[in-house]
Length: 501
Image 1 (cartoon, helix red, strand yellow):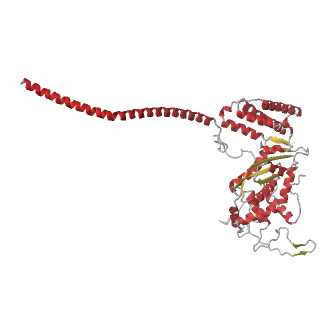
Image 2 (tube, helix red, strand yellow):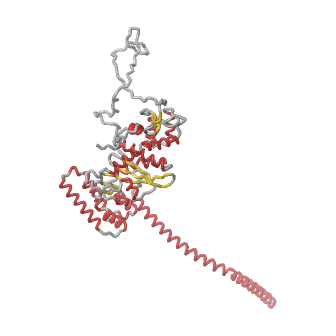
């Protein structure tokens, strides 16, 4: 019995051992299959860990850059086109304080119409209330002034002229009235003097678009005209006034002080430049495709400043202006702007010795010019010499920064052209006059985008030069244009804008 149990137990053990051997072989087969997968998984984990470490490093670097840029942004000055926040002020009642005279419009110089306004009269011929018919007490008379505009209207004039052939002059001659434009064979009516001058002023001075001008003419006086007709008439006006433009060129060539500057101007979709020459009483505009030195030579003439007449040219640091032999003054505002922009681009230069000394020197020069009349001549000359010595020392110094060296070379090159205004009372230390002259043109460029043709650009230059000059001299622009047109149509040569006597 025990033997059978043992045999049975032995058989079970053998069977279990066989099962375990088979299971072990199966597990060994699975291990052989999984071992490559496990190896590839280990390799992938290693690569992911390396990538994770790299990304952590890049993230830390980006965080440092973000912190640096945030710090620079907080130190960076506000851009020029961003208006500063208005500080909160204590509110006060608007207007002048009590006791001050009222600010009113001036009284009319003359009264054109006297119109009596009667009150109601009762049965006894006495003034009474228009509602209850009761006689008024303390009757007084008043004068109430009212300034009004007369509604405009189109006035069509038919000039009956006489023409004939002159055998001596060998040309056709025709009579013409003073306000009549030169005769032109057209199936429709010509534009008169007032219409031509008004269209030119609205286009050039007030910078209205052509279609707005046509609508204004149609709505107010009822004159129908197309935008193309306005363009054509403006070109005709420029040809009539071209002699006055040439006179302005000659006057500025002979002027003692001339401000010069240039800006971009597109003509027929191509980039060009608008040049300007100006002084206290005259302004000249010129549109050209080039920004080279030959343009300014043609405007000012080769003899500008070479006759020893004490002429001075005020400009920025553009090199084309350096070819003239005249005394020159470089714009100190441009130098201050260059210092400011460099520090804004590189905030670490805010405490640099060169930038601090240069800014302080320029500001002291401008401040001294304002105090010239308050100082004695000897004291003023002594302070000028001190400033020139400071400028010479600053220009001769050496610096370890590239921007500081660049601006030092500029000071060294133009050292004598930075202090001319300190020696000549009539010379300004900045070129603000030329920039103010260019400002209306820049607004015009923004509205129109430039000119459609070279002929239109030339016409605009002529008309803008004459109207700007008239404004500088305190003249009525509209009446000035009409006077010059009458003189040109009559064949008279007048120096209305160029007579400096």
